[in-house]
Length: 133
Image 1: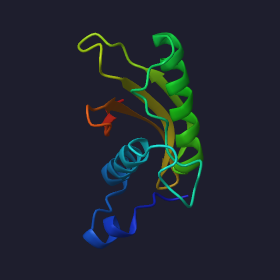
Image 2: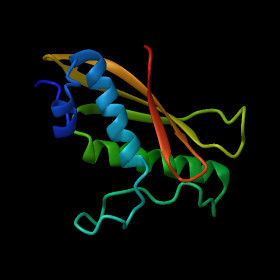
Image 3: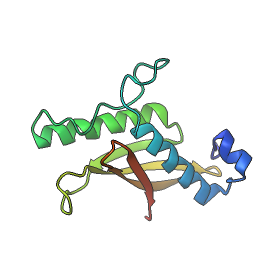
């Protein structure tokens, strides 16, 4: 299996397998995780519930958010396998949700461990960046 890029990435010439693969996955994860459940009419299960809506205890909300993100990535980002999501400590800002995403990514026929960090911004947008392993 090779690394797949979006049509626009291929047209723009962003096809470096190693760095481009990670950047492409991070960009896709950011778009995916910023999409709210119910906003895509053709795929009713696409999107996440509003992660800022904390009606439960903090522990229950983080646990539920973590599971939702993990399942969503497993369902809609086929380049990643063995996806594991964990909530990051809220040391700096207790109002900011942050998650670590670890998975396996196949690039040029070689599976390698990858990691991303995801931060929920104030406007409901999720920023995802690759982490160095």
